[in-house]
Image 1: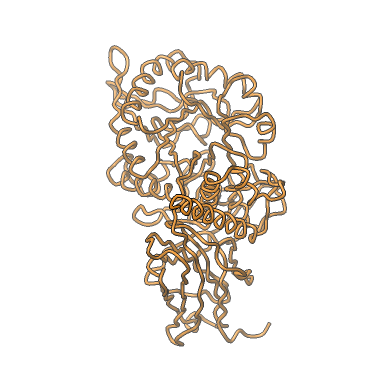
Image 2: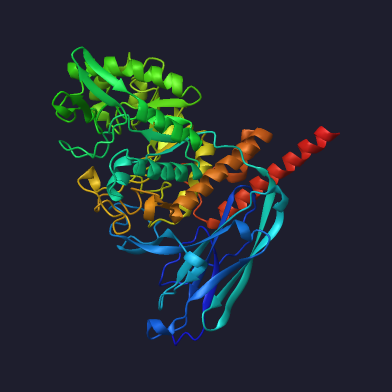
Length: 562
């Protein structure tokens, strides 16, 4: 190949992943236009000249100029280890299915000084956000890479258009489960200490940036991904005390949680599941203050239909509902019975649901389950269906309908594993809109445990939950220093998918649903198991939506002023 005598720089769009050993696909079209407050993203990939040792490679500083420069954030795209890229039986649409280092982490870049890696393509990630209406219109971002010894190494620019309008808020439920125990363990903080509340606030704020509208709320420690017979670190918001006459409850910490959610625009909360995962056979780990100290009163050792558990719920659920009605009247509350019961668990799930059915009368009960029998038998009113099992629900027009994907959805459907191309992440926004889905759920916003929560892991070193899940499935954000969440490529692209949905909402409200859908699905072939793998499709379709929105808004303004 010869010796590389000069630097290589390539502008790259946000749906490309830059690997060390291959020249990336260049940005072949202007960035899609955006609206006020919306983030536009692109990358600058670079490869240094040949060097025999590190001292031969000079650092460089990134300079950003142009009208939008003040709204530009620059980060390094760092490589992370993926020991399990995919399970057996995966489809062909992966960037690689071998273990290795993959681009994912978006790390802060102090002083915008870049240390290149010898013989390796790397990338910088640029986010551009214009919030000031005075800066709307056509603009450009000018980039310069200035070497520490050689002066100007690169100069280029990216054109953007910012429309002087704002997108509406996302009109569906969008939840990615927050795991409080992972944050307490990673940062080594006492549960619900002031330090942990500060960290929680930062992570909830970050979730809201990706248009999350709901947060899983640990009224008691959520009985999720926990080995049978084991328990996770207790993170119970409700204080429960045993008295001679039953139980007393304190909701102070729950009230603080609600205020935190409200502060960040989260207006739906999900109460922790009433029964264990995968069949609803047992009760969650619930801790009670007794004369002998704090005891784990319930858990795997107590059956779901235990009279003792029913007595607790009879005393707990009414005051909990009353507290929420008083302190969360402007928000929505979602209740869960059990997560992911299989069809052979239908009877057990039904029996567990009967334990709480009268106590939850009139409430919204939503559960992740993917067999249509749960609906036909009336076991659940609002199903959350895996995207690879959704066809019978759509054919029978089950409404409202939520969907989810997780580790098992690895063939032919959208997902966000690190080893997948970013288009599989971006496609979800089109799908949720086109099929009028009322909610999307993912289990892993920040799960930093091994599979079944047997022990904590360091997500910077283990992206697969100790090889339990394909890389990236357990989390979208990394725990940065001092309780600061660090984003991933997957976080940013998911934000784009939700922005696509919001733009489609706006066009639907200005015109009609069919007009909006036709711009992202012109031939009617879009399905949960059929979507475009061409990055250009997402740029072109979003540009078409934006143009139609602007045209409709201008027409409305003209009509109003006439």
